[in-house]
Image 1 (cartoon, rainbow, N blue to C red):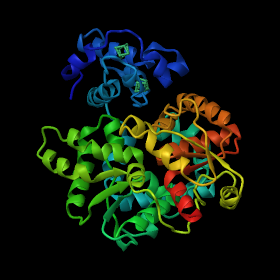
Image 2: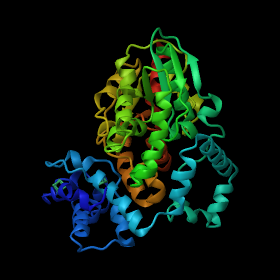
Image 3: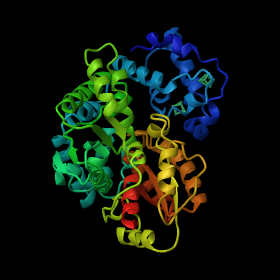
Image 4: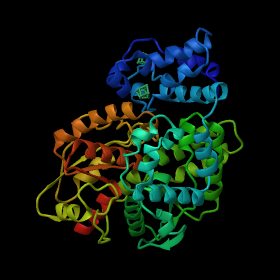
Length: 440
Ligand code: SF4
Ligand code: SF4
């Protein structure tokens, strides 16, 4: 879709400026080019040929987090994130695509085995200190101007993927009827492995069987760069995989994957795959809505320990959550859950029911954390400014645990906690569910 084709939607902006207060980027920079009104004015300028396609458009187009907060604050509900994203595709066509994107979108994400191999190589680099050396030598600059600065976001990486230890296939569960498919997102598969294990255990509790799906990336990363062609390739592969599964429901513990899987029919509008995408849609569930619908829970005997980003160590956390003292818990809404899927009350209700938990709502819980996929790698400084605001709000809750349901948010939040020297620990909501089951 070209910018011109979106003219009517772009022209709906009446320049009222109500979006300013909600935009994390505008609140961090104060620049009109970073808010919905400014971005839409720029797109209109391109259509009306007052602005030409050139590299100067990169910043206004690519600094948008895609968080959709502007749309919820806009009377006309102008879908700025979608419009900007469509324009990114045209930007790449007219100005050129980066080689790093081709490598990632065309040669790694469609193939889980290659992705695992690349993740293992990255883990070796990280854990041995080689990536610090590469940084010092300036080699990371090849992948983008901000990657050297972002090198420290993750301290260490797991040496084995989730599906390297739990191979795709069908496993027996303790439930009676439900056949569950577990869609393993890339972030869970190669980084937040403990969250994946907790989800798998929770699904086994509930399902007659759990199938760890041999899916590839959901397609959101290329989609959010406006690369619709590669997003469709990934989505098609997944739809074909889904059609071969004997499952009643497809659950994922990544809010971004869930939101994008639910978007497949829209992605395939005017495409022969549209009907197939529509047929699969009713089976897709975010793990939060799945677990919420399934309360109360059984017993797995597994505590929420061992999450990869644990600043204090798993043992300390186990002690904390199993002590008699109330544990202060707060929740961060991933953009793709709260606005992408309208999931807001469910996680809070789950958390409030956990024995020993004192739930404290944080201010601006639904504000983007600044992670936004690879945003922290491509726009490090801006992403950290957005994160600082989130950390100030976390600090005010004095929370022991900061819970969320997106592996990307987990990485970003854990980095913020480390940078701000907080005692808070980040966990996935599946890990909390397992904790609740342990206490029963
Ligand atoms: S709130 Fe909506 S209509 Fe108003 S300036 Fe922002 S995008 Fe335009
Ligand atoms: S999607 Fe988010 S970052 Fe982008 S303009 Fe809207 S509020 Fe700002």
